[in-house]
Image (cartoon, rainbow, N blue to C red; front, side, top):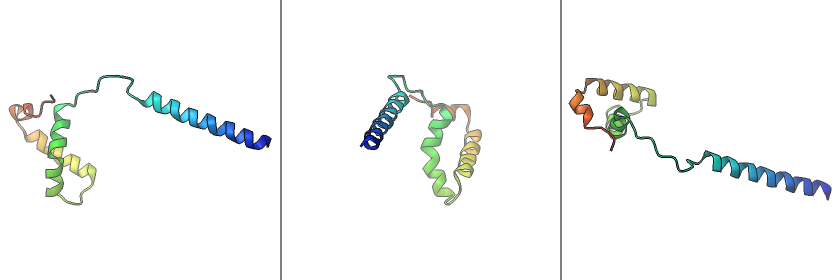
Length: 83
């Protein structure tokens, strides 16, 4: 009987800790950071690059996106400015 109460108490503490951790992980009303232009570019072009290079790893995919980004002119990069 004592062991059962002890188990219940530990379970309640575990649930409370999880709830506290989830609350602490929340944004707390903070503003969301804006994405930089390269990240916006990556989001918009990722599927296109994936189709061009099927089966490559995420790292290789990111390398291709980086090379594409480097070849863009400043005016072309401005088109991907975050809103």
